[in-house]
Image (tube, rainbow, N blue to C red; front, top):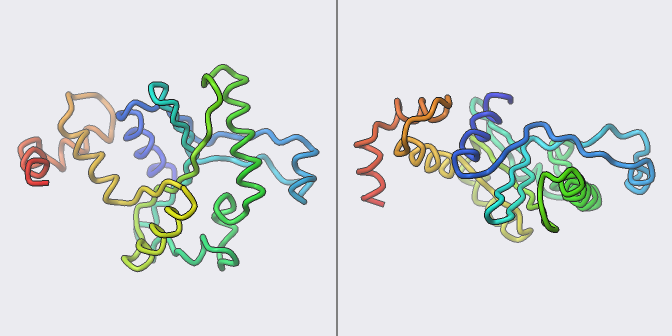
Length: 189
């Protein structure tokens, strides 16, 4: 969903990342053959985020699923019913190839420096409590980043406390989380 991706991108930018939406990965014909799919289209990453100060490089899949059952953990586990939605999480060969090519492309273009190791992650807007628990355990075991609605709320609360900027996420955060209430919440935490 474009609106959810843009919201997340604004939140990440406010936290010091540069963000690219819909980043296409160039795979050579031999890469595609090695993956067993010589005619596969170029893989696309929802959000690529890079923080120059830390060298952190994130490859993020975004799923809002607000008015639905949410993200189902079973789909991210091997043999999941809708595993096609989460190819990077369920296909280790594809994941390794895409993340390696991502780093190579960004270094070659001069966008990032050094030899970054991309971290795979999922940002989601809704999942049941049971699914969230399974996701947390599965993602931690695999070394992936998991950013759920609570993470997003905290980031928006931080945006509400910052100086005004003309970004939609910042304006909405200031409207929905008035400064006084946000400060009180942060002090209580």
